[in-house]
Amino acid sequence: MIELVKSAADKLIFKKNDAAATSEWRAVLGGIWSRFSRMTGIDVVLPDGTLLRGVSAKSRIVLKDWRAALAFVTADQPGLFECYLNGQVDLEPLVGDAAEGLLSALGALDDQWVDYRWATAAIYSSRHWWQRNTPFRRAALSVHYSVPALFWLSFLSKEYPIYSHYIFEDNESHESWEIACQRKLEFALRACKLKPGDRVLNVGEGWGGFLAYAGRRGIRVTGVTLNDESYLACADKMAAESLQDQCEVIKGDFYHYRASTPFDAITNMGVTEHLTDYDALMAKYASLLKPGGYVYCDFVGTTRDTPFRSIIQKDVYPGATAVNLRQLIGAVQRNGCLDLVEAHDDRLSYDKTCVAWARNVEAQREFIVAHFGERRYRWIWSYLWMCVYGFRTLRNGITGTRVVLRRR
Image (cartoon, rainbow, N blue to C red; front, side, top):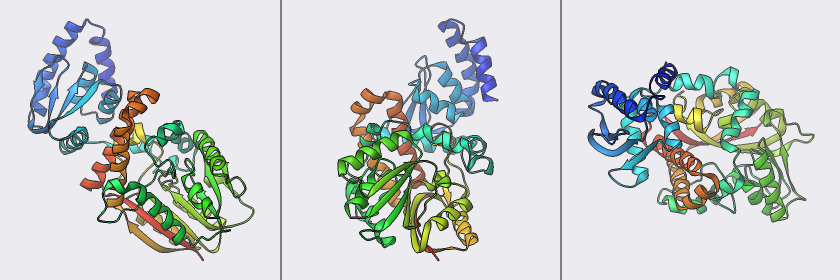
């Protein structure tokens, strides 16, 4: 429906001169604004500069053209986000910094708009059977990950670039992120009881962070990645660390991976969100592990069976979905070859991890914009703060989770 309205608007108004468009849209908005006149938490600035005041506003949405205004009055969250990425919408904090402005704006919109996340999930996520172990899932990954490694290394640890949550102590702030990163890697090795000479398969090697950490400790690592940029980054990391004799990286889909010799352990850091055929995932774990071998995995989880918000599903993380722990453990039980050893709720650690990444992104803004553009900066910055918003509000049960399994 929204697309039809936009199409009509494009034909009837956007081809007129600016003055006519402004006049006509002001008349339209004057009638529509009454439905938003009681919005709490945000002010809105129309393209002609008119300020529409909200109640107890903590942030201000600046609509810079009438396409952005149309997305706003139709409560089209993905459309408004697309306008934000394109610079047609700005967000000004009235209290605190830019991050506080975004968090308060998200709260205001969620209180008063309906996010049709279930419909968006049916098209863009991998939560449904027709989206799971399919070419769609593999192609969708490129939207998020097919960016040069230089982009990710600008805000992740250069020593151990891990793009899944770290483990913080309760008394630590986000500023302890590098310590928390190594603590997570240490936990994974300890949970899997890995020692020098053991073989481990890492699902979704990323940019070589796990490979470097485990390889330095004499563990033989096989990393699997679907992404060309990731594969090249891992090859560079292996060469820089002189680990070619004991580590390898293979480009391919984990669901289709085969090995002649079973592994002592499997690690999966932040990839279960993309491997949503849980029965196939457990079968693959069991087939690749020695008896008594361990699986360590961590992921964005949900305590309810709820999709990501539409913005994230469509423009940030298509092909992914939050992992429902109950469904995952159900697949473990159905498999019959794996036992659950331990599970941890890491919501607070994931919150701090995303704050650390977001602050690093802010510190690297000039570099990111110069090399990758303003759109890419807005994309990653807003996504990370949207994650923080989810962890703090608990609206959809979003959390962070660590799980350890053992092969019988």
